[in-house]
Length: 270
Image 1 (cartoon, rainbow, N blue to C red):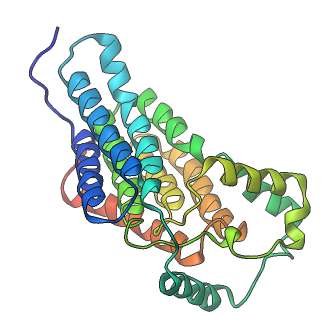
Image 2 (image 1 turned 120 degrees about the vertical axis):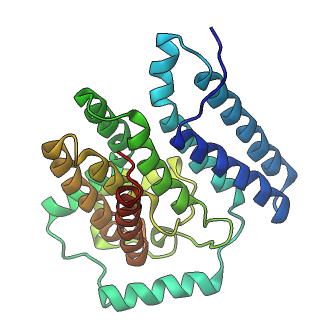
């Protein structure tokens, strides 16, 4: 049975983000095929969210709880349609921050076991959102919307700067290092080359969303929150050590997640 749609905050965030991308597609110079893909994705997201919001069927309600994960993933790849060419000025700014924060370190001296751990955690970080949500809903102590509002805000605010701040990730610029010769490292580079949009996001969506998951879990599952918090910091460190992100990307992502968490507390979003 279909009723009048009543959208959740996280769903409004998803619709708002795709409306934003649709407007940006009319403002920036990208091939028409890319514009069309952005507009098509926006229509699909709007239709899916409105249909899910208007249904009372149990199966649809369950699917609705998980739908934001699909919307976030689609948002990532659709935002990649705006990447045309790196900005030399922005890339130089990112690299200057790397020099300040890392003092020229290339991380070749990181112990093999630590490098292995950081690579594995970073490679698997895409699992943190669904795993975190599964742990969250098992408690039955808070609405799904609270989790997804925090995580979606962290992701969309990270992705949304890409049309205006374009840069290559460090791994695409820097030469291969001694640390890149291990099998796990070669897999990591292959994985990111084949499954990412091959563009840098500032702040880091990986860092912000991973920490947002941990912060969302804190009130309902403190032990799980602690585990996901360790993994989130590991993802941020792995993104820099593995040269998937600049140091300032990871720091900005962590700050962004904390700011969203604090804003939700101030707004009384429980």
